[in-house]
Length: 491
Image (cartoon, rainbow, N blue to C red; front, side, top):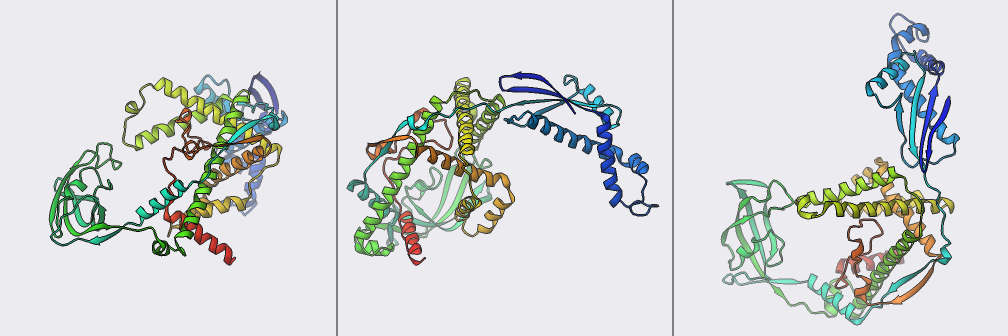
């Protein structure tokens, strides 16, 4: 194998690789010798087929595989011998590279064994990254204390979620805030459509649960009343085959219930699994503290990555930049399309928006390369147990389908890598956070959960949490923690 360097500029490399036809022929003969041991041909005893016959019969079929294998092995060796780390999959160009028809003819001659194999290998190498002194980096950690107001608001959220209803008299009409139970059949042009029918469907009037205009036509109805709800699906409705269509929902009101007052007392607490109201308050307070700490850590991580992005200075492989941008831009467009909107309606200045997304993709590549190097230098790895733990948590999100979800991850290496990546990133960031200087700053809850508008388009994993006007602690969240604690006690 003869390797000649054609280009070495910045991160770009181009090598010319030549493989003599004798080497290719020897590789072909090795493959034919292996084939001879197992092939069964009519008129020949097993293992006794002449090599000359196999060569005449199978060369055209085997040679493309031989050439492919030689290219794979020689290109890998060429890079390894130079002790270079390749940024992305190298580009392989046969022959001169500027004449597709001519290149095909050259490859055909190689496969026939009449010509040497000559190809170019184009690639970019990973940049040299100098890690900063982490002890010189100083960042703020925003912290907030749980107040009585936070606890009271969360208790009120739980109380609202536990709203109960009592039956109205048959003569009373349905009002906003009432819960009705209805049967309905949806029809378009007189024909029922898939997913447009239900029986005993509960609906709180005024909740905005159904499509606009549906609930309003049930206000003032009585039990047993037939109602034809005439409505148009929104133009941006998620089910495209229904978007903008006019429909009639033939409905029957079967039950009307009015909301009952729910008091926050010991009895209420017992109904949702707590000893008394005081124990419920303690559980709510603990959950809010966890939420605050989670938000604080998220902000701290964001601050660290912002600081690193500012001080890191090294060239980026253009292939990685372009690949990351294309993925991000395609995801952005896909989200718009999925919402039922048009790209031009959402993006008023495509050039400006594209520039923003290129900046985001560059940031991702820069931080990704740096964090990978820190992981490698400090031997930070992710164990299979850590990955499997997250996979099991994922399966619990799909009750009744746990085995199917587990099978999906087990059979899809890319899906497993999508789990492994964030775990590795968090471990590296936590490693760095242990080394930097951290100064705590007391802030209000609103500041802690304030959204950073400078990164509205940054869909990266380190994005800060969205604004939360109130800390919403649900009954399910509190009860889940209580159940988990009981399990730990049993263990």
